[in-house]
Amino acid sequence: MKILIYGLGHIGGSLALGIKKYCKNSYEITYIDKDKKTIRKAKNKKLTNGDLPGTAFEKFSISSADIIFICIDPSKIQSVFKKIKNLKTKKNLIVTDVASTKENVLADAKSILGKEIAFVGGHPIAGTENSGFDYADPNLFKGKIFIQSGSIGLQKNISTILNIWKKLNSNIVKIKPKEHDKVFSYLSHLPHALSFCLNKVAVKRLGAKRVKAFGGTSYMDYSRISSSSENLWSDIFLSNKDNLASSIDDSIDFLKNLKLALKKHSQSNISKLIKSRRP
Image (cartoon, rainbow, N blue to C red; front, side):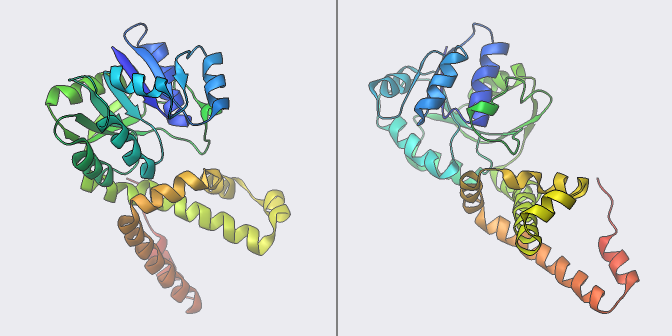
């Protein structure tokens, strides 16, 4: 069975290395990446079959694939769907993704791929603040959650994709796309937005030297994800903009109430506001 991985970043690269390690000889892996340096690095890791977009190799890889994993920024997934649709592909091709938003991707899959090409929406909860193939890790998904969300086609296609993630030692969870995007606006997208905010504000008001000199464990832990790729995260934010805007509104309400309690010097109000229990 042939697998094409489209995009060898942190997630796509880890997926390629993980399948190579844990699926043994079950799959033949090919890949497409826009960066020549990444392709060279991948070949040094014995991922030998890869090339740039726009090549004959790309067309052949799409046409001959049994499964295509799309591991690129959400806004660019449409363009890959169109490439797939415009080529003659295998009858039982399954297209899947790893994007952290699901409603838009599923809608694009329905409008572009149609009913003729199977699609299985997916989201591994396993990324770090690092980006690029340099940080690819075959064990990245071990013990981590993989969310299956949205699909086009037969149930057996979902099983085929989930079997791969199980071999990578992921824990499988299923959720509907609309609920997925709301949940992750609070559990992933908002924390990133707040981390970017914290780092920006601290550096602006204190200067980078003082932040580096005095930033303790709590600051370093919380600001860690602000070193994530700004290009990737601006793309993710826009792909889930309505849900993220709502979660930001909730945060602003909390901060306004905290600010008011501070002005009133009300410890009881502050205590009520900040009292919480982790699930």
